[in-house]
Image (cartoon, rainbow, N blue to C red):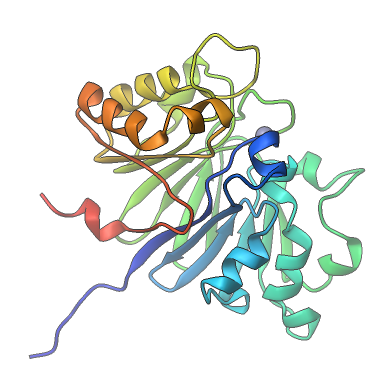
Length: 262
Ligand SMILES: [Zn+2]
């Protein structure tokens, strides 16, 4: 009898740092997320050091089908150019797609013009639109409230659905735009009373209670969250929300098969 295991779907956290101080000092790494969804590999938000974090873990850029940027801030986009060069083997193999909001590609683009020609194409992310890469489809349901044009992403694979809730101030339409068995939430701030366009731990609690995912993963930690120990925050949120809440760690590989047990 042949063992018919479904192909693996994994998310590797190449960094968990959020915002300027954590990233500038590399208190945590800032390499974004590397998705391997039944063989379709996608890099999400390649912040500073992605090339180092990826090669160190033997993730091979030439296997990527796409690079997706939620927005143009440096902690989400700084390694775009080198990752495009690596994905296309220095431009010798024209290959792969870049997805980004219009303001990341406009008058001050995050990608050099000579590198654009190495790609199969560039697609502009827009509110409410759907896209596909290999056997993965995704949507950018709502424009976030952030200093620059920003979208979160709802992914659908043959086996799973999950959401990546990128940087945003909390707003009423945020929850209803996302769903899935798994939520990945960028939680920069510890307290809700701050002037920044970022989600806080109380915001994450509300989102998890509202959407009731099987698993929620907190990441993109600012200094206040880091000092409060994300793993303890996650434990507290698990108790308060009834969902399993995990604090991401640099290098953590989450297997989506974990969503299938019970
Ligand atoms: Zn940002």
